[in-house]
Image (cartoon, rainbow, N blue to C red):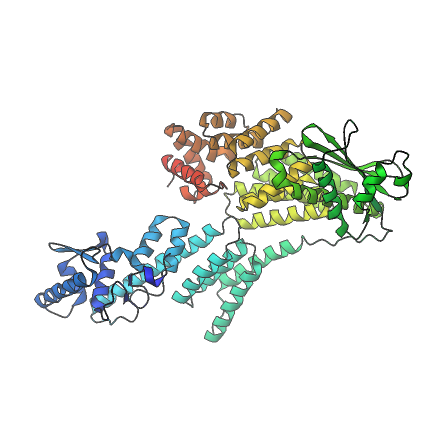
Length: 639
């Protein structure tokens, strides 16, 4: 790693030091010469230019003589295997050892465009160029001031861009923010723009407390200096406070049931032909029952007794359980489980769910699904106890339906915002409408995507809405589906995969969910499974809206079937949302003329986004996929 003294033989940023050998003393002018070479065009200076910079007040003959002695000292100190400088007739060039200095590594990292290299480059900066160096001569002073200003400008421009790129998707990056922020504040402690950069970065990750701490730290500094905040800082804080207020509005009061605790009995699971289920299924149902014992609003009878009671032929033992609800499990082929919740007094099916426990999924999904089924059962039993006291406004449902009609799989920004307004109206009338919360999350996530992924606050709001939706109704598949989608775009791949499993268990035949899960699997690197789910979704929705064809084209592109990707895009009513797919697919398919046409349209929509930023919009687990997309954008003429 950069920034570690033992691996940086020459330090030119901060107090200059020569660590390349055990030599006790090294001439300061030698370090100045190395810095000047690294900062010169082509890393080359003529002997005359170097001598004039270092010995401005000496005659040319004496200055050149001093330079010859200095070059000899440098060559002796660094050796011949890895010299600090190279002398070529009248020119002096930076050598391999100079390229291992902190200054060279910083300049190299800035040019690389790679976030990790840039972060390491910033961490290598321990101060200004050649701190505490003896300044003699006007020419040297002007050169030093100019180069310090240039390097600072490079540092802070890279610092601001790196913070934005690191937190663009709202993921957690607190350690990275803190480390490079510390370097920036050490370099220029009174630069208020640095504090604003840090406040915004923490807010983009959702850590508003850290953002506020940065503001308070700035306030203490300004107070000690007797200065007020800049207007831009106060305006930024007001805007960030607005995001906090939005998130606070998601904390809903929890209804507290006050009725007598109902008793829930799990009957022994059976196959559809009436035979006892396998040991695995029995263990799964027992796990669900055991998970439910933590709930205080109802009582779960021991599965040992309830299983034994249901095997009693005349039913007398079961009657002795005095159950209010019965959970019945039927097993079909391929380990497909149908779980229903029955009210004993009426025989009414209150709730039902299908779960698939196949060998491929069981290791990862067994515990997860048991928790989800338990949570859904608990929510339904609790809701059953209080729903008689709850008033639902029918007009709220009408607003919800209006919102659904506006989106209907279309990728249109004005329609998304109108739909969100309808869902908000539904929530104003009925705050417990979980599905409206989930749909708001969907509109926010789609808006984030259509705006080029530049506003992580939209993702945070989408995540908050989706989580509240699952808290209101844990059995609602779309809530878990939206949690999964947001986690995917925040690069939390494992969380996303788990949430998609939960959502699919709750809504196994939802075409909308299948298409989103298919898209996610492609991002996880499971292209064949993704394509299978895409085909299943189209089978359920053959006259599909644009978003289905967009997802299918994205999957085909990742399978390197570029002609198929282009053909699927042609089925869309409006190809604006597919411009990235079309640009990359044509480019990688060798049709550069078409790629450049779509690339120009893409740049018109996102004029400030580079090829690198466009490639990073796709949340792929494998970075090599993004690198391929980056090269495709470059071939299409995007810089």
